[in-house]
Image (cartoon, rainbow, N blue to C red; front, side):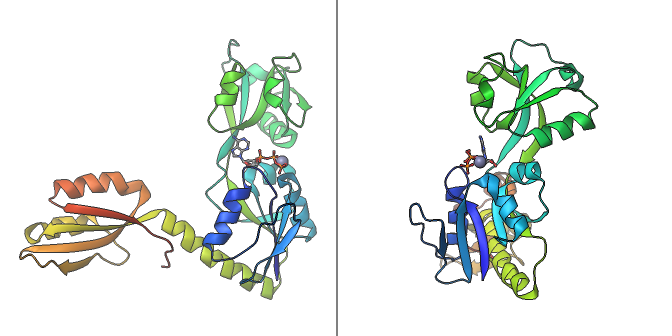
Length: 283
Ligand code: ATP
Ligand code: ZN
């Protein structure tokens, strides 16, 4: 049995639950429950504050955890990062009042920086040989300059709208972050086998998300060119259409080359292009 710690509520909760579901693992999310057990996988799920997850995993109270890299690296516990999960994206950035002239990191010399991430902020400043005063505060960091508590802040940013409404501008990115799966430092053979089973499913889910199933009709005299545009898992499937001289081509396209490829397929004479999401993908 593996014990997995996920965020009880907040930005990572829904996506963590969704990932389990997509991996075919059924967990009930009873309100105000501290833990629950999956019905069809040897997994117990603990619902905790995200900040506490690295500690629980270090101690072995939980074998696995899902938390943001920002939290994992800030807490600096002895745990292993197993896998990036592709959700909870944000960045840890330094911001200063918009009117402030800021040239480079040395502009922060002697300044006061408010943050909930003292470890990562200090590390960044030291690496850049800048001396600044770090004020650790636990929330509403973005208002610190406005109330005269600090000259700058170091906080999580995603869209930047919080900075904007508080009259701040982002000047340094110190960490790009997303949710990761972490594990306790030592795993026995049985735990490792269970983790491998879970990872196999996670990879299938993530691969599927990054790919689309494409079906299209092609005139036979354009088949060669169209097929050359489509990689497919091995190579595209080609089936004859009932209409003489035409074929149906099936393939898989990755998200990042998708739009570019679709346009080139159309230009090459493809018609009736259908794009279908893939639920799981096992290579
Ligand atoms: P908890 O009650 O569990 O301590 P919290 O208030 O500390 O919750 P949330 O705001 O739910 O945490 O954020 C959890 C994680 O979501 C962050 O640590 C970060 O990894 C990620 N995240 C993604 N985008 C953002 C964002 N714009 N602001 C803050 N966190 C973000
Ligand atoms: Zn938190």
